[in-house]
Image (cartoon, one colour):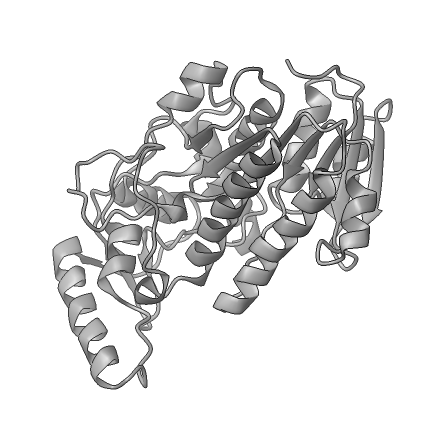
Length: 346
């Protein structure tokens, strides 16, 4: 381990769906000095509950904005490890760039002034990979091609996260800052924003279209992801590495939807084979170009491949270099996820 249990650790986005779990994972592993950076208007309920569960730990909650260089400077002061969980989730390209790239640049500039810093962990996403040229059975690992055709894919979040990764790699290499990048799959669990991820299908057209039922979903239970972020922050010998973070034995899209209907609520859905929906996206894409984006290219072939092609994702590198294993089984994680949303529908 690269630090002692009482050295300061900064967690950005600490009151979010993943961030509060990262704080909990740190405290469960015995780290006693945790600094939580949260948005001024953020909901504190989940984080407050975590903090109250560990009364002996020293947890500082600091409200601040990563767009402020001064507040970044104050947040990172004296930190040995920075776990950068905060993310931009705006819908526009400009918004995602500001929320993911500009904020990360400010944080890195502040971190570069700290002689105490031992590691910067950037929480990215599997969305950064481009799989349009992959066969459906090809596995995606950390050597996979990163997306560059952001506008054609019409994916602002992918743009923000890819540019964030590029910034971290370039900045940290030029300033000799030790870093690790983690790329989780779609997160699920109690508190998730959505019960059914878009990789299962889409309800845009008034009825839920279940696309590519045999696709293996690269899901990541939120507690498993939080544990992996902590492991990436404290394990020796992995500086400069990137890791995919997904559960073992994830369900297929068909299995997930069937379990949802059995355990949460039943609703009507229509199955659409992947190749048929890909053809639909081809026509939509061509019409968008012909109309000069009067009809935005919301559905296009690159997005179709990224969301519904179903390439399996490997977590072997993370396991091999850190000895990490998912603390919560996929079966248990799905049970907790469905129980939470069943309670919301009760």
